[in-house]
Image 1 (cartoon, protein in one colour):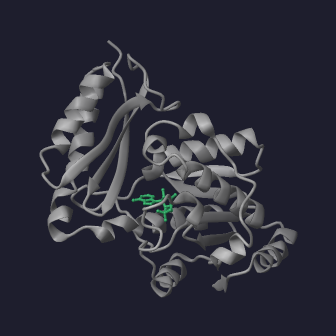
Image 2 (tube, helix red, strand yellow):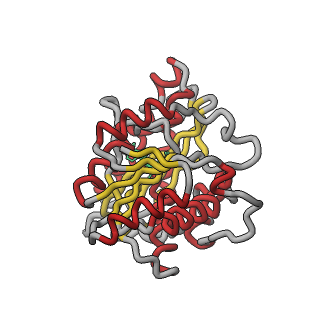
Length: 284
Ligand code: AMP
C-alpha cells in the first residue's frame, strides 16, 4: 500500500493503472477510521481493481468555534486499517497541498444544503462539495463511496455529480452501528462514559419514528415530536433537530407520502451526533 501526500503523485500513480484499463474506487474520509469507514473500503475493494482512500480533515467544512483543531487524528492506526482492508493507495495531503492559496472557487448545492444540517452549519456543505469535487478531479474515480449515515451529504454529492456531469458513480453504503444501536462516528470519541451510555437514545428515537411511519402516520409534526420526546428521556442529550421529510428532497412537507427519511442531530457534551433511517408510509 502506498502513502501519498502530493496531488501529482496520485495522478501519476493512478495513470499507470488507467492505461491498463483498471477501474478506480475512491473512499473519501477525514480519518480516525472505524468499522463504518472500513465497510466503505470493503465495498470499494470488492467493486474496483484499484482502491484509494483519502484522509483529510477539510478546514473548509468546519465553522468558527467547531472542532477543526480538536478533531481526532491517528494516521498510523488509520494506515493499519486501510492495509487490512486491502486499500492500494492512501492519499493524506496537508492543508497546504490541498489549498495552497485561499480558495476562490467553491461548489454550492444550495437547495439540498439548506435544510437540517444547513440550518445549524450554513457553510458546511459547500466545504464538503468543494473538497469532494477536488478529490474527484485529483483521483478521477470510476466510483466513490459514501456512508448513508451522512444522508444529506450523500444527497448533496449526488446532486453535484449529476448537475456537473461528473463521470463518477456515487455509491452509498449502509450505516454501521454499535451493538446497542449507536451509529459509529469519529466524534463518538468525545463522549464521556455517561454520555456514551445515553447516546443510543438516538437509535431508539429513530425506531419510534419508523414505527409511526410504517403504521401510516403522515403528519411529520407527530413523528418529529415523538422522536423529540424520546430524545428528551436522555438528560445529557440536547436535541438540535428531529425531522421527518421526503427521502429525496429532504424539504419539509405538511403531509408525508411514499419514502420518508427520519433525521436526528443531538448534542451530547462536546459531540454533535447525527443519525437517520428511512421507511415507506404504508398505503391505506
Ligand atoms: P468522515 O470521516 O466522518 O468524513 O466519514 C467518511 C465517510 O464514512 C462518509 O461517507 C461517512 O458517511 C462514512 N461513515 C461514517 N460513519 C459511518 C457509519 N457508521 N456507517 C457507514 N458509513 C459511515
